[in-house]
Length: 100
Image (cartoon, rainbow, N blue to C red):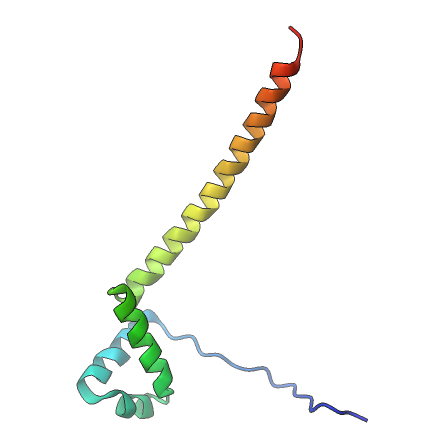
């Protein structure tokens, strides 16, 4: 006996390109969000959130993606350098302890 309804259909999330978002927001400014959302088959809330995100950073979505990629690269490089510094500190301590 099953008590919970089982579904085999995973939730499908659409990923929209930065260019699509920019065009959709440009149309929304011209024609209004409800009409554009209906024409494109999107939820109005999605357009509102895209608009809020763009206003927050004051940058187009493509620039945001580039900055996020650069930030991720810098974080990885920083972590690698921190590991190197920790290793060098241990090596320096080891060699400082050895009698000459």
